[in-house]
Length: 308
Image 1 (cartoon, rainbow, N blue to C red):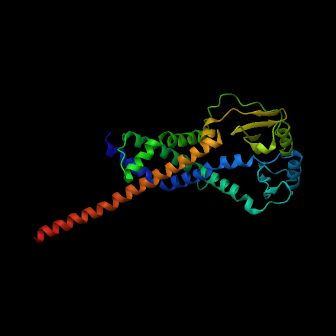
Image 2: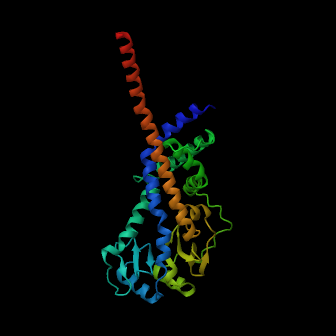
Image 3: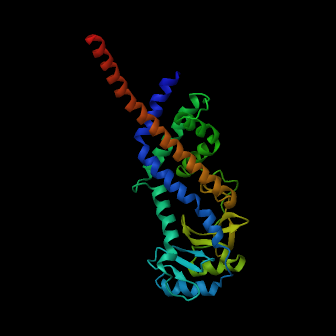
């Protein structure tokens, strides 16, 4: 297939999905920093499980909270789905609003990244479009590296190809439920635990300052805990705390397999994708603006020739 035939769908797909892709890539860039923020949050002092249980019962007496998140560095806890404010673990009182701005930003970015305009299909179709753009770009052949807009566009695509291709592919794996898990999930022991009981169970074998969240997910109680820079998922039931098989597409896509390495790589990936999208649109805009000018110049030349 000739290069012009490949470039035509490449341009049209970019134009159709430009705005959704911009939103997905921009929110992805914000979320790229989340693992680093989470790792910095586990550097605080030890947290007493009794204190956590006491505050859960005080701020959620009806047991409506789906779970909780902990930031040991700032000594704050947030209940999920209970309508309660962020809680200061030291005083037991609602934390200052400024302290919850960053978690709120990450929450907004995640919701937008996963359900753009409330539509998960829009994110999935835009991600498929992103992969299609990359495949079409690869088929056009190796680039000639020049200090031009087109040169930077092609150079960025080829030098960052492993990163920019892995990001949407792992996103599609998550969308379609492909986990590539190496083992079976542990069987649950009895019914789901209440949140205070789950906190006690986790605290019996793990340091709560390393816990990012504990809550109900997929019909079972789960905990997400940082261990050696990796965010591991654990099932929490009456039998104990059991490590779940690694969901590699999620670990790679979110940068949680090693926060200090993967998070900067995700930042680079997002910047590369923004560069490709912006330079691609600029190349198209310059080409469209150049055509009317060239036509008007030809018409002017023809008029001068006739007059002569």
